[in-house]
Amino acid sequence: ANITEGESSTLAWDVDGATTLDLTDSLGNTIDISALAVTMDSIAQMLMAPGTVTYTLTATNIDGNDVATADVVVEAIPTIDMFAAVPTRVASGADSTLSWMTTNAASVRLEENTVDLGIPATDINASYLATALAADSTYVLYAANSLGYEVASAPVTLTVGAPVNISFTATPSAAAPSDAITLAWINDGGTTLTVNDGTADVCVVNVLADVSDGNCNVTAPAATGNYTYTL
Image 1 (cartoon, rainbow, N blue to C red):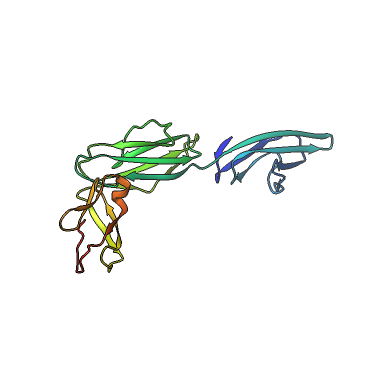
Image 2: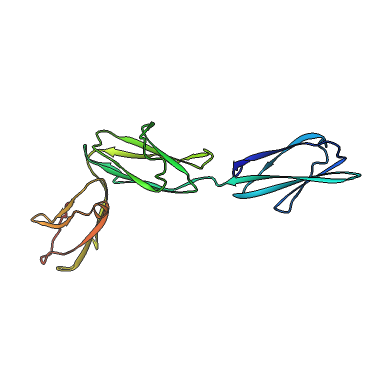
């Protein structure tokens, strides 16, 4: 029998001529079946760890004994170790890449707004390019072991719209003339970024990861006063 960890396997017997039965497993356990019928009965055993467990049933009477064995193969529960999209916010018509990693999975499937996208089932550690996005879409990844035991990821939503700035800071916020200043930002969406000091662009960023969460160093103006940097 094959089961997934945490499930139960039923051991059943049909014995003729025995007066006693003993049941043991390859893990060193003796299972109490004294309340069960010697001739025909069954017992369910829950198994929590992947591997093969062999059960041995010994039927005995005054003339001797007979032994039968049964193997139960326990498969691991699949896990989705990572499922993410970069970027999660895009302009209309733009693309985003969904990536994932799994453990103990024999197959996966990917749904967009509950519709199966038909990716290769064997892409257990892979990525998918969501192209020409026109509206917000939600993706869920499912991973299954060879027995069909399936788990689902948390939903990942791709938002279509203009970039949103989450934070923009200057450190230090008060500096002496010509001191170094670090400008740092966190954004949701966007493919390029510029910072302007009112007269010129002092930072230009085209690397997607740095547009999302990055910084640049600038030199404070030589003259004293209040200055504004615009992202």
